[in-house]
Amino acid sequence: MKYQSDVVIVGGGLAGIITAYELLDTGKKILIIERDKKENFGGLARWAFGGMLFVDTPHQRRVGIKDSYEVARQDWFSFAEFDKEEYWGKKWAEQYLHLCTDHGYRFLRKHNINFFPILNFPERGLYVPGNSLPRFHMVWGTGWHLVYEFIHRLENHPKKENLQVLFEHRVMDIIAENNSIQGITGKTETGGEDFEAYADQVVIATGGINGSIERVKANWHKPWGEPPATILNGAHYYALGDLHDATSRINGNVVNLDKQWNYAVGIRHYAPRVKDHGLSLVPMKSTLWVNYEGKRFAPMPLVTPYDTRFLVERICQEPLKYSWQILNAKIANKEFSISGSEHNPSMRDRKFWKFVTGMLFRDNRELVNKIADSCEDVIVAQTLDELVAKMNALTGENHVKKEHVENAAIKYDAEIDRGPRYFQDEQLIRLAHLRKYIGDRVRTCKFQKILDPDAKPLIAIRSFILSRKSMGGIQTNLQSQVLTIPDVNGKQEAIEGLYAVGEAAGFGGGGIHGYRSLEGTFLGGCVINARVAAAHIKGHSLA
Image (tube, rainbow, N blue to C red; front, side):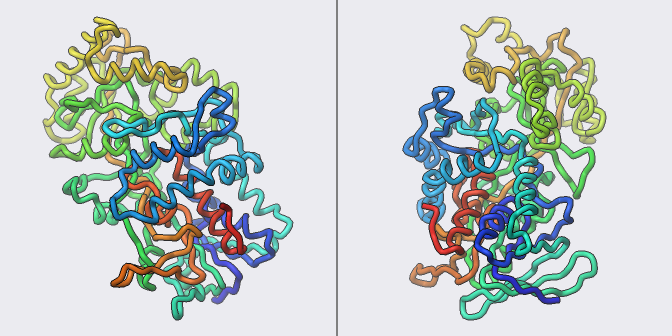
């Protein structure tokens, strides 16, 4: 089967959809080729919480936050810790910050996307500075509404007859001659039939490699040693790197695949869609975070929201690379949360007062009970003896020692009894600091003791590393054009007619984040570099 179009977009996630939307006005024939089923159009973004990093916005100014490109750049380059030889990632970081407010925030506001008034304040930095100000703008309606809005606009576009979407088609290769792109080839998912699609431009929007745990492990950051035995899958199940490989075969440059944004608190999904499907818990601030033996992490206790990469790295320094969170029902009812649209229905469905009252009077009992009843990684017990016994029964080993957990909890609780003016525990000091910001205060307990008899039952959550996002990918220039592998003199050229956007491009340049993300730059990156690619195809620039 053969198709002909002006532009072929491989991948129907947010970046692919935004690219198509931006190009429809031109009158070009657009073909989106998506491997998944029609009901899953939108990719991982439809399941995302929907936070985006913007700088110096009306949302920030309204609450007295004075932000600027200069401050944001300083934060980004500090936190990213770019490799010295990194070039395009740095250039893309600067371009993102220049474009994000006008061509991200204002573009989305114009298209019926609003943001919650209170900004989140993640990745503040631990040993290196991170976000010095809140910049995380939460889409009102989560990624679910974001995707729905743009699919709706595609389906009702005045030139919608110029758009064709093929579902359940897997693209496997790129057709190229003399460093110029002709189209793509692949097979249908249902019948395994060969197909070809020819076009003047091909845009790769297929996501990263983190849907393949094998590739995650093969590209594991070498200084961290061997990857964990169990890594749960929190990426899109079709983010397998097919088009990364196809790009390499035509001399396109694929870089930084060892730079991944994985999460430290993954639990098994109660209704898995793929093998080892995981849910990403938002790390609770008031839990005791302990290793596989029940020893509290030291000398720095693990606490969020300072440095996600540090959390993952620290856990991976242990002989067994998973962890436990020890808490009680009172902490869980206040702080337990799962990232994404699936488990935040009041925000996803834009029920403002239900969401606000839920934040102010946090009572997560329904969600906590659901997960405790359906997820093997969540253990509930009335006594510490019972809790430890169940933890060891779950793993089939006797690694967890009651004295480790008990000593850590007694010491922690005793310091709470002494009061904030005498805090020396780093976690409690940080909790006191976090509670000064309203966005954290409403979701954080006020110095809750672990062994408090009035806060039972006790809870232990076994937490695995969760694969999430590829921060490396197909290297692109500042127009989102795919670049060749450098020759012996280090020279690169743009491959005529080939673009990469979103996670496939490492969210810009094959590595816009370096080693760490300030967060909100993943969905934001999909919007920005998709619009950059579309602008270049149309013959102009966003900048």
